[in-house]
Image (cartoon, rainbow, N blue to C red; front, side, top):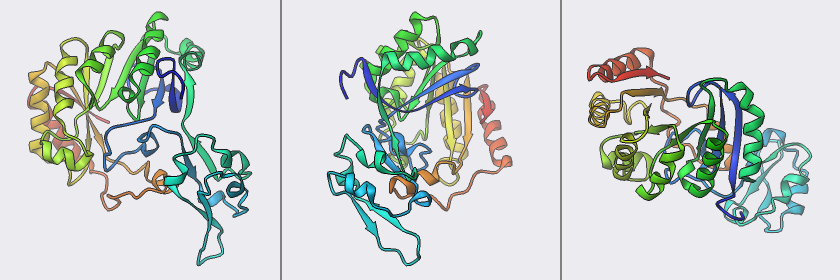
Amino acid sequence: MGDSRSSGIVFDIQSLSFHDGPGIRTLIFLKGCPLKCLWCANPEGQKILPEIRYHKMNCTGCMECSKACTNNAITLKNNEDTKASIDINKEKCITCSELKCIDMCLNDALKPTGKTMTVEQVMKVIKRDSPYYKRNGGVTLSGGDPTYQPEFAVNILKACKEEYINTAVESAMFTSAEIVNKFIPVTDLFLTDIKHMDEDKHKKLTGVSNKPILNNISIISKHKPVVIRVPIIPGLNDDKENIISISRFCVENNIDRINLLPYHKLGVAKYEQLGLTYDISDVNSPDKEKMELLKESVESLGVKCIIG
C-alpha cells in the first residue's frame, strides 16, 4: 500500500452530496472497519484490502478471468440452469494485489472495490469539487471507518484545513483515545453512530464492545460538535429503553442532536457480489409511526431529533 501517511485505500468518492454534513460535500470512503454490523450497507468497506465484486448477471462464463488468476482462485460453477457463472475462492483471492482477472473481464462482471490513492490524488478531486461547497459545504471522510487508516485520514483532513475547507468525519469511533486526539484538531464535525447502549447487545450486533466508542464520544464532545446517529433496526435496537438511554448519554455529554436512521436494505446486493451472507434478510424497515414515537422519546429529554 505504500506509506500509510501519504497513501491509503479508498473504495469510493461521491461528489456533490447533500448528506453526511452541512452543505454540498465530497464524501471520501476509506476501506477498513473494526465493526461487523449485521445490517452494514457498505460491506465492501469492511476489509482494508481491495476486493472483487462479482456481478453474476454480466458473466458469460468465458473463463478469461480464470486464465489470468495466478492463485487459481476462480473456477467455473456448475449450475442447474443454463446461466454460466464462476466461483471465487475468497481465501485465495484476498492474497492477490494484482487483480489481473478484472482487466481480462470483457463484460464488467468483475469490478474492483478499493484502490490505493495518495493524499495528493484525493485532494485533486476535492479541489475540483470545492467551487460547489460555497459557504457551508466541504469534505466528509467515511467508510468503512476513517480511524482504521488514521495517518492517511488525518493527512487528508490537514490538507483540507490548509485550503480552508470544512471537514467532517463519519466514524464508529471504535479506536484508541490517542488516535481520536489526532482527529480532533483537523475535524469540524463528528458524525458518530451509537448502535446500542447495552454492551452485550452491542457486541452481538457489531462484534465489538461499545465502551471505547462511548468514551471517545465523551472526549470529542468536549472539543468539537458531535451528531449522534442511531440506525433503527426493528427487533434489534429499536426499543424505547435503548433510545432513551442514548438520549440521556447525549444530555450528559452536551450533545444536542440525534439523527434516527431507518433501516434499509439498499446494500443487500453487495453481499452476494462479495460472496457474503446477509444474516437479517427477514428484517423489514420500521414504519413511519414507529420512527415518530422514537423521535418523541428523544425530544422528551430536550435533545433535537431528526429522522433520516
